[in-house]
Length: 400
Image 1 (cartoon, rainbow, N blue to C red):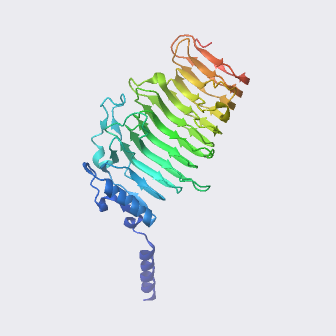
Image 2 (cartoon, one colour; image 1 turned 135 degrees about the horizontal axis):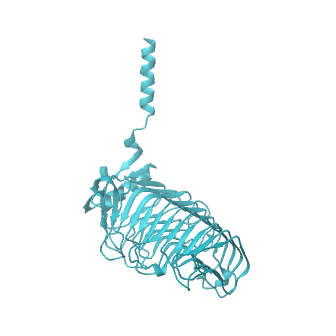
Image 3 (cartoon, helix red, strand yellow; image 1 turned 30 degrees about the vertical axis):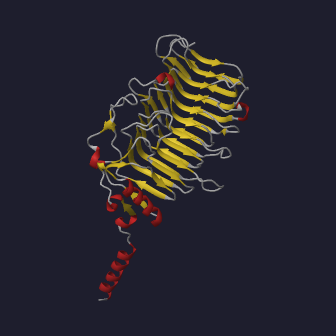
């Protein structure tokens, strides 16, 4: 009898301490979301997020196609997740109407379908946010340079938090002006995701003046541009401690590869410093420039980019690495370019590395090549360069 009583008490204790899966999240379907690709599910999805924030839990959006007519807003710590991604069919020009959803996504994946003039998800908080296992697809494209983004993270100010430890993973974003916009945030990650058919940028990171740090990482993503206008996969306008690791950058079909950058370091506000920045183990193919530095600050002398490392990347572009002239001397200082496989697909005007306005640069152990059979330059040093090391590099083909 005592043993039976003991087993009964143990079973009761287990029943009390076990959390039911149903109580671990808020289900958008329980709040009226239909996910049938035609009904407006905005309010149901927003209610799911609101309840999850109140209960300090997660908002789960089951597989389906959820039309939204206004931006989904996040104001405090929450996780929003779905049943994964499947993708869209056909990489194509932006705005050519050849993008459409895979017929198999309706029940197996979670797809949010925003209207053209709105962001998909907008998080304004200093709390950590997690968004994963869903796709955001714009079937009607927003106008270029509007900043319309699939996901926006923005810190709300102060000296603490600043959306620290926020993560975006296993998402697909397609058809918007930008995929992701991040500002005034530190310690964030974007990983294992896919971005294509965007209009002007895939990921934009732009902290306000005074928020110079960042400690962020963009890793293991696939970027495919379908834009017919000037385009950059990643725009870094400010912030330090960045790591761009193991990504694939490409163009699709007849996209405008002559104006496409992979990683674009482009400070635009006075007194901005981008440092340090590590770019490792990425692949760039078919772009105009894989990695580009341009100083667009109104007072160019007030902005700097220092402690940069470009190593172990595979590149096949018109130009592999460019530091544009700034007119104010060396605004880039402390740059190591090492161990890269660097091919160009341009003719005599192309070069693997073209650097101006930079000092303390070490170019070492790279392999330079040209896949067109035409002559190109391995290294071109322009105005404002000083203390540039060049050792252990090899040239192949018609590279000069």
